[in-house]
Length: 121
Image 1 (cartoon, helix red, strand yellow):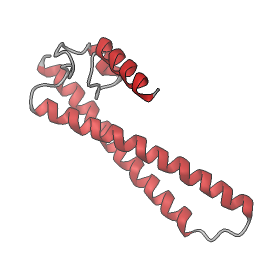
Image 2 (cartoon, rainbow, N blue to C red; image 1 turned 135 degrees about the vertical axis):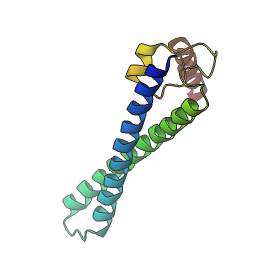
Image 3 (tube, rainbow, N blue to C red; image 1 turned 120 degrees about the vertical axis):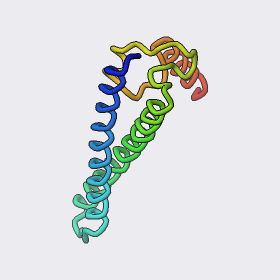
């Protein structure tokens, strides 16, 4: 991958890193506010619990994406960015434009997903 594309993806990853960090901070703030709220009405309590669960799930999802982005930024430093972690082939540029923190090429991602689904059963 040429330096122009590397810079493009590095900027894209940095921007997403900032967005996720901000989202995680906002989610944590919302969770603290929900916890501090002294609700008396049963429907308000149920609603707050559901909102808390949703916020927690979003924080988990963002945390996983954050980890992948940091890993991708490290790969840029190591000059291994854009290489599939399973087959060592280059990951298609179009795939990286959609998911710049992709670890696998399309074929290996499908294999990974099938393997994960088999292990769940």
